[in-house]
Image (cartoon, rainbow, N blue to C red; front, side):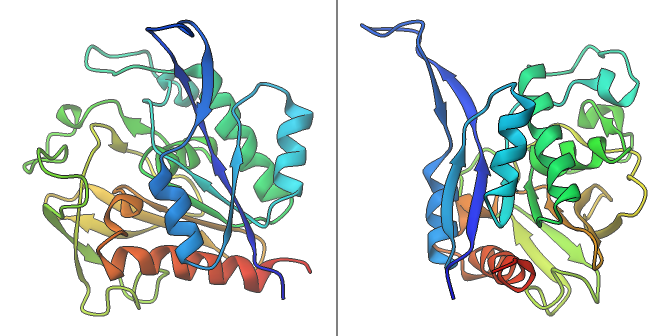
Length: 247
């Protein structure tokens, strides 16, 4: 059986200095690539662009998609005006990721959303976000860590009978954290599968015969280099892709 091809959404890096200042490059953190390879998948970079027909072909030619982290999601997409603490937005990326999600649902390709990837999936499917953690009055712990990227800095409580439950069999996990936005209204069809100690949504899923979307708010790709539990997330996703792909 052929290894499943995992499309990884990319971002744009603008070079500011040197001979090629002003040039733009498609990029993705190598940690995503390594995590997919180590999970038995074939990573395939999906370069950001605004051509809907090309984006549709991307989705048709991969077996599953990872939506990577990045900029804040534009709040007008979920019907809100921008608030004071909104971070940097990139509407072209919002359009790109939204189309990836839309076509992945159409062609029944599994999606794994990481950090921003989870947030844009929730928004594209009808949910909303807190534009900054400070707009959620219940937040009491630090969600943007000052530690090495692979270091787990806070706990999560994991629901039973979900995608994560056999990865965290005790119902407790320890994760890294690099976000200032989080889910507010959950999109229809999704369930919350993990929360932090202060109630912030840390994982969601919408899984059926017709759709497969799993999202986590942390960055397991950064932890996977020396954390078996984090790597298992990618292994389970790649295995799910393999089960659902059409040979």
